[in-house]
Amino acid sequence: MRLRRCHRGGEDAPVPGAPANPPESPTLFRPRRPIVLGIAGGIAAGKSAVAVAFAAHGLVHVDADSLAREVTARKDIVAAIAHDLGAEMVAADGTLDRQAVASRVFADATARARLEALTHPPVRQAILDAIAAAKARGDSVLLDVPLLLERGLVDQCDRVVFVHASEATRRTRAASRGWAEGELDRRERAQASLEEKRARADFTVDNDGSIAAMRQQVAALLVGLAAGS
Image 1 (cartoon, rainbow, N blue to C red):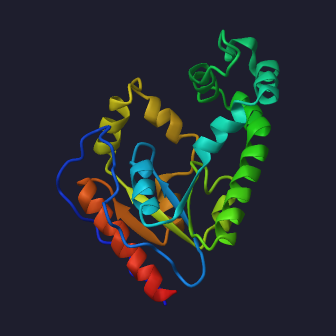
Image 2: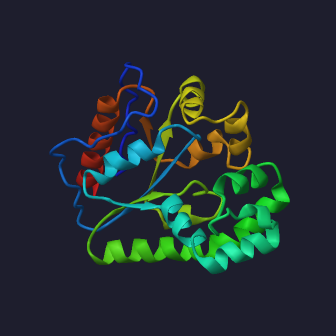
């Protein structure tokens, strides 16, 4: 049975950068068979806040960015990045200068491809290991991967949730992060289009309104999934 997509809801403007605290007593999501939900959306749409809302219902949040930070903290990976992209990619303390790396790779497609060749295989394996471990425990997974479609990890998902936020909201949130003008556009050009992400999604959660409204949508989506399982 195909579930209906979530309705957009909430008209209160979210406060940029506000913490997305989960509800106090959310209903745990325990379908008969653990599932993997992928999350997609535009940059600065608030996917992390939505992921927190899903995790509050007991889904294991597999965060590719967090796993990537662990991988790029490894000395062998830092050395390889310095060799391929230049010593200026490494800070004085020997750790990766993430700001320098981001500035380089989002402006240079060749440099981005070289970085991805170094980091994506170990990050992908860490993601697959985390999914397998969660499912072995009987836990469902919220798979939070920026390049979910581009790297084929969407194939690991039973369902995909698209997080909607208007362009104006996303630009406000990007500005609240201290991003320079044009940074959001530059990063989005490195990802699949919003149209493609929407087309691959099974459900939509509107994150243009209040945090409470977004949480209600997440809870309703999981109730429907549990009933359909």
